[in-house]
Image (tube, rainbow, N blue to C red; front, side):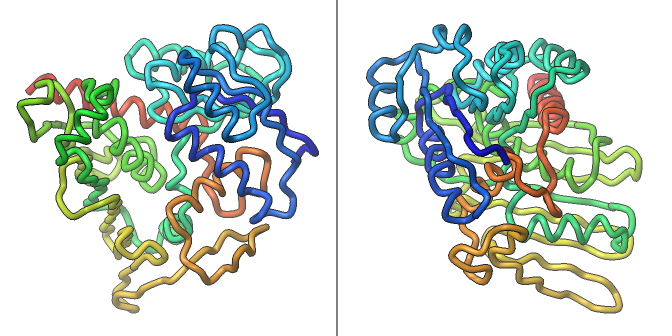
Length: 357
């Protein structure tokens, strides 16, 4: 890692606050954490950016249009509204001083965005680009993925990935979050939650996933008819013929924040559920079902508070930051730009399948 990292934030909303927390917390987990200078935060809303800068110790609060001629940061976090992610990433790639770019999901909102990102990815832009799929860094999922890649579970036969919330069941919450009721792939359950489920499926099953069909469900009088509250997609892994589903829901009672992954192979199976976040299950005929407790297993480099405490939701994001700033990857999969593009293509295909219904 470099000795000093000079950081800028594009975005001053709720998830920008989460990233500010992760940056501040890195030093408690990793001895090799560099000094981090929070140079500026940019947002179109003056009161939002100024309050954010004051609260989280950024040196300046700026309008986004004013940052591109500056050469005072080497690390950029793109955390604004979904439709800004691709334009900001393209501008950042053309900014000489910026060497590392972290872009939140979804990385795009249209076929044009995907085309522009593929052009960027095909060029030698000289940047390290990471996309915001931090669930790849959950201890149990990292270990499960390494286990799956041994090949002992055979070829995939069928699979299920679900990311479920219940927040939009509350009318007051729907009203408060009305700006997030735009249709897929601009916003909605699939873009917000399903992108994480698709990221995991790509990590485990590869880039041969194809959307066969999709539909959305759920509706309220105070929600636009094209809003995405719950989407189910049918997918095929074309090299094996395996079929599976992705479900993204904001209206599933009793779920809170629940992520489920099940993959059944020709020789065995793997299961993960955030209801038991620090373990995964495997099945092999000679072993039967086994529970693998991983806890906060983030070696190398992390022993705080210890490796036997529960990992927590934010712990995976902190490790994503560690990897982003140059930490040792170990068994971790890096969600690079190519990974983000693959997720976005499946989101776009899901959107088109929903519209075709």
